[in-house]
Amino acid sequence: MVDDFSKRRVKSGIPGFDDLIGGGFPEESTVLITGSTGTGKTTFVAQYIYKGAEEHGEPGVLVTLEERAKDIRREMAQFGWNFKKYEKEGLIAIVDGVSAISGIPSEERFVLEDRINVDNFLRYIYRVVKAINAKRLAIDSIPSIAFRLQNEGDIRGVLLKLNTILLEMGVTTLLTTEAPDPKAGRISRYGIEEYISRGVVILDLQEKNIELKRYLLIRKMRGTKHSMRKYPFEITDRGVVVYPSGEIY
Ligand SMILES: Nc1ncnc2c1ncn2[C@@H]1O[C@H](COP(=O)(O)OP(=O)(O)OP(=O)(O)O)[C@@H](O)[C@H]1O
Ligand SMILES: [Mg+2]
Image (cartoon, rainbow, N blue to C red; front, top):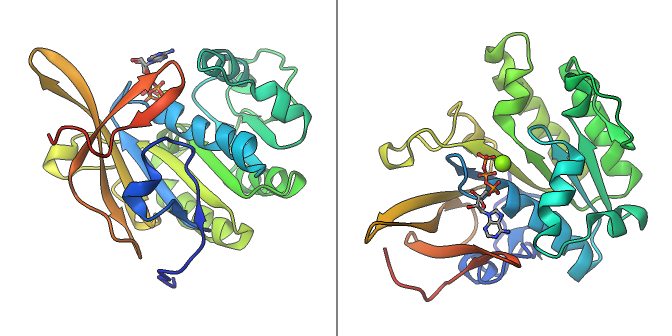
């Protein structure tokens, strides 16, 4: 992989975040968004896809393997985001990887079949990316791919294949995963996600004066100067907002 400092940057769509990483995600890279439950991973990646379309006219694909597409649209509408509008314009495609397993008939345009065959899964994502000429891709989440494999151990092979396909497609990708214990250095569920990712962003909660506060840490961003401090962020009624000059944790 070429670590090129001059690579074009892809705007995250998260206020306050791009300044921390030299203007945005390096183009055509894969970045892992990791954190425990409820830390804001889904909101972060949905915002990346939505704002890409709304603010930059860049087509994006959101693959949702934990929540149905219609639940995502409803939840994200609380932040004032109208996914349907951009789906109709062909700027956003949501791939529903949940409805089929639950056996409920789906009215979605892009639905993953219930039994994931790895090659079909990857081929399907490839097709949807090409169909809307996507520049952005988000997959929520890696563990939910693994749970649906017959042998969870196969996830390594899947991630390596996924990596190859992502490089070929030329998209800038966010992957979500779980961090079992970021403080102990375990920042991903399978311990391999970070190796296929050029960057790792940890979302976490920390107790402060009997209140849980959100913060994020850029753990790695190859080819980019970034600080290793923790930055406070909030989930507001407009989505994720980072405070680069906020109080240092
Ligand atoms: N409209 C809103 N305004 C403010 N905060 C919200 C709003 N909606 C959700 N939240 C906060 O966001 C959190 C969930 O964020 P999100 O679903 O993105 O997290 P996640 O890391 O994907 O969680 P999971 O592990 O369940 O997938 C909620 O627990 C809540 O604290
Ligand atoms: Mg989630």
